[in-house]
Image (cartoon, rainbow, N blue to C red; front, top):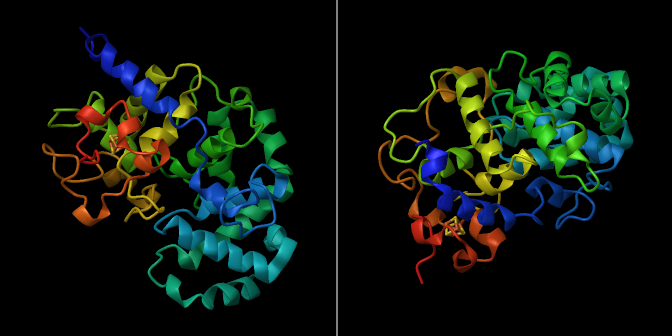
Length: 315
Ligand code: SF4
């Protein structure tokens, strides 16, 4: 019997867990119009909102999301709508403005950030409005390929290509986004630490001492088969619920959601936390046990996975 055949009841519980996230929006939308803490005067689904999301994804590497969004808000305040045409403005000036941000010294790609932003700006000039451009591609994997090819540090040499995949997923979450027009049967979601925690606790990795993949590409394919099995009609809907699983809330996971593409050969073949075999909580400090999944579902009492979840609230 396959894992799916042996675990039909469990799969139904997981699908109920997924349904609890239907109304949840990506935390990054909180900083746009309509969100809890807007820093930009655009809704995420507007042309400029979507363009800012692409800037965010291109730079989302080795830095916490909150810090990155504040870098973008600072530059937006400095440039106004010229922010979207940085490739046409003096490079030295952009570098000087970035250099004023002294708390970015530990951000390993900080020296490359001005070049990345100018490359994204070139992309806007070449392709115009992102929403219609993605719809015209009508193929998520082709969109990922072009983003990697044309934007500096977007993942051209990465096996997982997490940045463009995350951007594509964000597009599925926009009001009126119509993901079925660009999410084809071979389009892949990125993998996050929460996804792997979930697979180890409720999925086919439970009890396994060794990962069933060798290469990062096999890892990506393996995880995506699981997502697609759970939600064949809309696999993108699996991303947020699994990502939120035992994720310290407040957007404060100690490592960024996506691995650094330059270290993907290492990050791509192992588990995100050491401690296999053992509890999924081994690597998480007691003081951080305030989870995003719990917040979104309104507490563990509402959660169909609570009886088997090592992170459930003790009542
Ligand atoms: S921590 Fe609570 S809400 Fe999250 S999966 Fe476990 S039981 Fe469900």
